[in-house]
Amino acid sequence: MKSLLAPLLLMLQVYTFAANPLQLFPMDNTRWTAVNDNVMGGRSKGSPQITAEGRLHFRGEISLENQGGFSSIRSNSPSYRMPGNGSILLRIRGTNRGYFMDLRTSARQGGFSYRVPFRPTSDTEWEVISLPLSAFRPSAFGVDLPDVAPLDPNAIQSIGFTIYDKKDGPFDLEIESIVFEASAGREPPDFEGVDDPASALLKHAITRGVPLFNAGRPEACAAIYETAILGVLYLPGPNLGPDPEDEKNFKAALKRQADEPSPAEQAWILRRAINQFLERRTRENQE
Image (cartoon, rainbow, N blue to C red; front, side):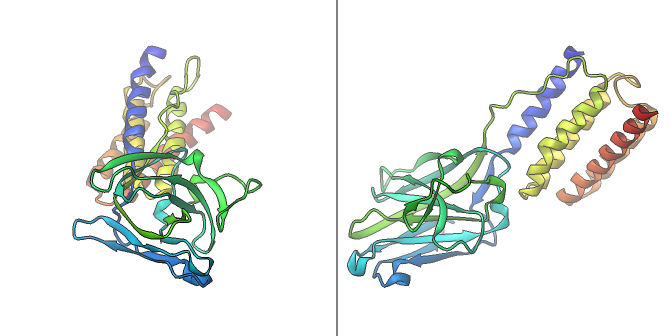
């Protein structure tokens, strides 16, 4: 049994990890806004701009007058929800000053965010820095909040950047890309001794595919479902794999998926075929 399922699980894992990188910037239909210390009487200036090259350019000048000293930008989108733990990769260059990346689970959380500090090392050479989601800490108006619940990656609705290093002077930060990369350390499940490996494989695909669909990645979800169905079709039936009627239904679903242009509908076509198979297997096991 293990020799039959090992290549299928490996194939499913490869598709899952290949689908994990999630582009957060550049992203269509996102609007960046500035929130500076003038909301509290300060005089700092800072604003976002999308350059002709498609980069996010955050620049301005920090003033400590009137107890000010910060500038920030943010963008809100339901597509920022992240399917599980991992890291955010920033490709940046900029002034060697102290910045924070901010994540918010509501677009209306004001001064509250989950944040992590970072510092560019060059204003001319591009570099990629990795910010693990586990490193983001709850904070409000610069004060850490240790009693607040940890960040829920699938609830993120806003990403942003803040400069708050208590220094006067100009700042300049260019961001070429923001990518979420899920952790790839999960081991494939061991189906050794499982009485119904086809159902187990399809349930595992649902577990991996649903978070990606909910995070705005229907094409990744559909790829995982397709891989699992193809794997089930390779199993010798009907004891381990599908019976002739199941095989016919799966092949018909794969054909409809190939003809369907919408990734979301592709995922649903395959999910309905999977559900039909699992419901029938459940009824058989109850008889």
